[in-house]
Image 1 (cartoon, rainbow, N blue to C red):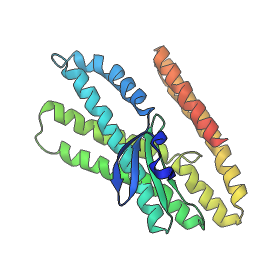
Image 2 (image 1 turned 180 degrees about the horizontal axis):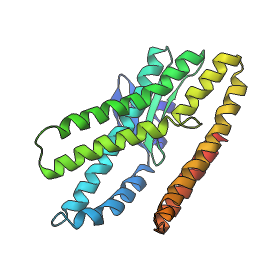
Image 3 (image 1 turned 135 degrees about the vertical axis):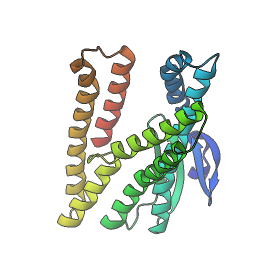
Length: 233
């Protein structure tokens, strides 16, 4: 079976220029987490089940943001002459699978930067929508679209693997030294530093403000930290 068409990657959402786009079977976990996190807060100000509906809409906007991010990688990879096999959105965000044969530092950096660029474009769309007279709920979603995409772009540009910024660092070190293995090691160690910094900030910031992180926050930060550490390793 063609790996790109293998249903084990998740639910096939569609194809763009022949590239299959999958919703991974783990993605509903993040959708449920978003609804359970924001739904109760929004339910306090929105009548009926509208608060949970808005939280669900935000989860879908986040899915769109992930797919646009990965589509940026796919477009850049194709433009660089690489075959793109698939795009998958899952619990960890998403990933684009493409052939890296003949990859060079310049094209590697451009492919990495194309994902955050897609998020910045979506943030711009959200900002433009905020400049119009929208109903309160739509204005809230426009703000969420802007903020979440700015955050995703900024977070992904942090200089350590497995984030896009880490691949940019790898490309720069690779270009300067001519040693791709050394470049990967440098970017990997920076990824560990970024992971420790992110965990300390996410858990330390509420403590410094006098609050106690919830069990959900601790569990989520631990999960993300473990994923980033393993990716860097």
